[in-house]
Amino acid sequence: MEAAASLVNWPSEGITRVPFQVFSDDEVYEREQQRIFRGPVWQYLCIEPEIANPGDIVTAWMGETPIIVTRDAEGQIHAMVNRCAHKGALVALRGKDNAKHLTCVYHAWSYRLDGRLRSIAFQKGVNGKGGMPEDFDVSAHRLQPVRVASFCGLVFGTLSDETPPLEEYLGPRMSAFIQRNFGRPLKILGRHSQIIHNNWKLYAENVRDSYHATLLHTFYTTFKVNRLDMDGGIVLSDKKWHHISYSKRATFNLDREYLTAEVHSAKYGAKHGDSALEGPQLLDAWDEFDDGITHSIQTVFPNLVFQFTLNSLAIRFFAPKGVDKTELKWIFLGYERDTPEQTEMRVRQSNLTGAAGLVALEDGCINEFVQRGTVGAPERAAFIEMGGRVAESNESSRATEASVRGFWHGYREIMGF
Image 1 (tube, rainbow, N blue to C red):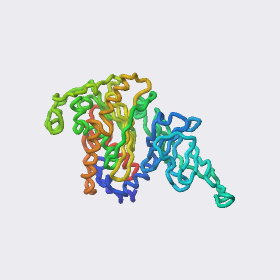
Image 2 (cartoon, rainbow, N blue to C red):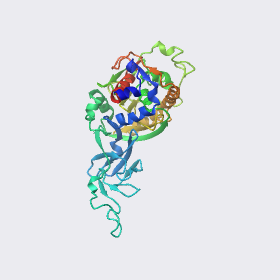
Image 3 (tube, one colour):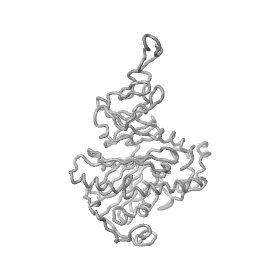
Image 4 (cartoon, helix red, strand yellow):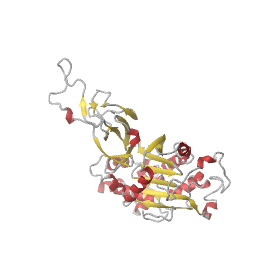
């Protein structure tokens, strides 16, 4: 703890202040790789439809650690570090593949789909000369294994033996909401990938911040997709690390704050009631669940997001690529039982978000603005007191930064700050 305290001088106000240093400090970034991404947390790897068949292989990341996920001939799912046991080269080079085994192109060390070494080239040498020593044991060398667990078709991995079971890590309320959205057979509708030029934690904050959505994303506000004057709330997990933000489009009660210049002016977007879409079918939707929730964002610490907007279901996951660079990936999903008309509506609604979406494009910009604005002032700190000073659920208001404070609660705990 003493070493951590000397690394970051966290303000005495705790989770209501975040030192700008943590967004640009190389030593902090390296500690995150060790304590978080190689530490006792579960991280999203893939969804089962991506590895539906024996021999299917996908690659993923846990922080900056490259990962391989496979399904073997018996149908078992495995994960391992994508690093050859010989020289450390990447073994799987394609994002998706199907093969009977894994082979490193450098020296042809070949592995089973569970990561065990099966053979190496020239083990006995050539013409009786060279080769490995007599005591070389193939069974003593393998790809580093990763613990895996699957829940509702979502495959998670961890590099730590200390990570609790997945459903315990998620907690009952988070698990139940994942079950709501993913508890039926899924199909992949499309993908996006983008590089955002900011520290990964700024995106982790952003997706927990329901307060900004009604100000930055004027499309949501103008067309009543997601506003703070809709019924909704914030739910934090028991440990405060994960969260759900939800709103109900049908129960909309206009707050006069939306008519003020600060919230809804010509400077930022169309005035209330002045806009119309040339393609209004973009917002066509059907009532999919009986709980009335039409928009939700759910996060799982450290870097996973589930989105349900109208009928657009998506997974977002983001991997740090340096202290000021993050890769953000999206998978848009439907259900196997969907009608062709429902699938068409989900695909159309996917244009709301993604790398070139009407809404998410703004997040990529604003996070970079924060990165650029904070890098020169590591001694200063963010002020996070909207909705109070604690990290707790609030199912009567989303005008709060409670879930952002929840993220920093978990971050400080695992980092030792």
